[in-house]
Structures are given as C-alpha cells and as structure tokens.
Image (cartoon, rainbow, N blue to C red; front, top):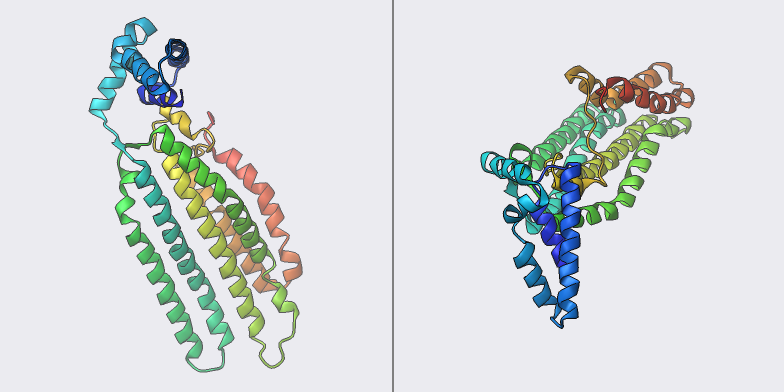
Length: 321
C-alpha cells in the first residue's frame, strides 16, 4: 500500500495546493485503497494488486473530469512545459549533503583563521615582524580555505540558479538526515555562543611575563566559537536548501512542512538589517569591551541583543507573514 501512496504523491506533486485538490487527492487515495483491498480479498498477491490499482487509477489526465480537476490539470501541464523543473535524485541529494559538510568545514576553518590572525599580532607584540608575519599567514590560510570551499561547491550552484524539485522519498530522506544533525547543531551553536560570551575570562588571569597571552586566548576562543556556529549553520542550511526546492504553491511544496519557510521581509533594507544584526552586535561588544576593559559588565549586551533580535524580526518582516 505504501507503493500506491508514493505513486499518488508523484501524480499530484505538481498540482496546486488548494482545498479542492487536496480533497480530490484524498478521495482518489480512498478509491485506490478500496480497490487494493478488494483485489487482496480475491486472492491476488500484493505486487499484482498494486500493479492493477496503478494501471486503473494511475493516469491523472484521464481522471481529471471525474475528480473535478480538469482546469487544474491543464494549468499544471502547461506550467510544467513552460517552466520545467530539474529532478534532483536521491543519489544527488546524498552527494550534495556530503559535499555540503566538507564545504562547511573549510568555510568555518577559513573564518576562524581570519579571526585568530588578530591574536597573532597581540601574542608576538615586541618580537619584531613575527606578529605581522603570523597575522598575514593566518589571513592567507583563512582566505584560501574560504575560496576553496566555494570551488568545491560549484557543481551544485544549479540548485540556486535553476528550477528544481525532489520527490517525497528524497524529501523524507533529507528530513531524516536533518533530524539526525539537529542535536549536533544545537550543541555547536550553544557552545559557540558561550565561547563568544565568556571570551573575556582569560583577561582575569595573570600569565607572568607573557602578558599578551590573555588577549590572544580571547581571540582564539572567539575564533573557535564562530567556527562552531558557521559550520553548524551551513550544514543545516544545506538540508533546508534541498527541502525548499519544490514550488511552495504545489502539493510537493508540503514535503518540507517540517522546515520553516524563510521569513519574507518588507524590503532589501529590512533584510540587510536582519542579516547584519549579529555581526554588528559582536563588533559592538568587542569595541565596548576593549575601550572600557569592563569585560565583566559588557557581556550583558548578549541577553539584551537576544531579546531585541525578536523585536527587529517583527519590525522588518512583511506584513502578511
């Protein structure tokens, strides 16, 4: 029976997600189930019964009049011819997820090296050009990793530039992988945020004659924290990208119902404000901390920013959200 349900999903995948279509789909499923059970009662095996049901009810064009969907079927066929979508297979989805993990790791490492490069100049201050050399080496490595991560992802650019779709089996597989990664994501983001908040702690300790160790450790903690956040967010974003391939106005658009659709904002300015909110908060935190050296107090910026973030989202999102 599961095979019949999958086939029915394929039949209705491109149909508009309207109450009329959903009702017709439910009615057709009931008819297929009744026929399937009837064939089993007559002594046919499961495979034969499935084949008979599909051959009898498997053409939506022939059933359009009976289901009252003639107009919807015609519009769907016209749309599919005018705007064809590339089918992303299960194998392609698996390969993309694997590739996304590698890209996320390289990208996160690149960002981390760029951040800890500042620590090199602090740690080796007073040692001639060693600090500057170390900083440029870290920046070069970081930028190189970021550039390389974009190249290994180049073969999947069509997912963002072309109209694509996935079937229900592939969507279920992606959602299962996403659920399996959810705990890792939660741990990485939580630990990353904690490291960024407590990065000032090394400044409370005395490291003897090597007084530059504390601020260098601070940037190391920030780098590791950002690494964890960037890695987890990019991997999770890969799952969301696959689940959002289908047209949201069609039945197949419901395959991603476990994944929240991206928030639409009022305009580009509002979208930009939301995008730079946390980077600006981080810069403000570090600037105030360095200027006042009140690390034990400036951390209060983070809980305040967390509350204000929700306010900013509400103010910037489109009115129909």
